[in-house]
Image (cartoon, rainbow, N blue to C red):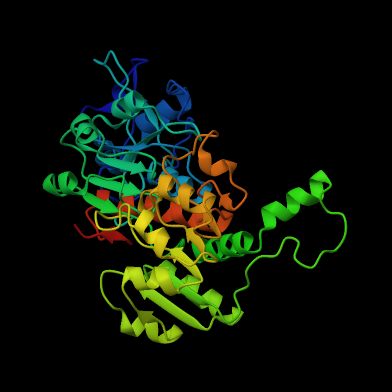
Length: 426
């Protein structure tokens, strides 16, 4: 390594820490530059410190000045602050009492930018984070450019990670972390073939999504949007015995398609309303989970025929795509209310429109649609008995922050080659 104490050139490189060593026996006297700033020239006081340091100081400095290769991370959107803070710490320059220093070095015509690597197991300093600085989805071409050469990708459920994008990323890509519990936007077979690890965010959004499901069910069955509109447009004149009547939950039968984490959380919240019976369907019976609600495992047709309220909470798979179609709605009671908080593709929306418009079922509430956002001229939006929300199941401040933090920690753990807090086993 070159003797930096004799350097006179104004060209600069950043001091980097490749291994954890004994701290330098002096405080570096120059300030750390902000990441957006050009590195400053070495001050005369700083040069004096390095030149006057003893052999031990010089050797310690030498061990700390091996450049390190950064791992590139690309984030496809602005994410909530807790997750972003975790990523920022991973690229943090400060280590203990010492800041990154800029040392003049001869024989260089360009700047070499590095970050420090602190002691294991901290991930700080191991990655260079780039992101699409917008709340709106990143255009496909920008996504391909951004992910090129990346070692890690943090994406959202609106980002389709397919073979084309994986090819654009190249062989460096080792970790994909999605800020979602659903993974239907990921080409899992292709990802598995390339040996890429996947992190996701289950559990942390269960409560928020279950709360939203119950809210949407009550909003739909008690016709709250219609009632609010009547107040606003002058339709509220006097009390009438049957005006704005809906359907109550007490002594009803609730059918849940998918008794997973979210399905169970929904049933748990509905039970105090006086539900008479829970039915559920899925890939297989879940007797241990169902015992809490005395829920009965039935076929999909039987669930459709016997339920007063149906809530779809299953994952989107080839088996569930288009599950709720014309035949399904024809089997439902005319007084039944249908709610979907899973994925839009589980429902055939044309068939749902016909069922609602023709009085085959009473009402529907949807937090998910195909596509998203739903076009403003879509026929479903013309119906008073259809309540559509803009996919806000996990939209609480606490939940979204927790999701972003888990997604960031999954990514960083994967880059370190460590177990992820929540890894999808492929």
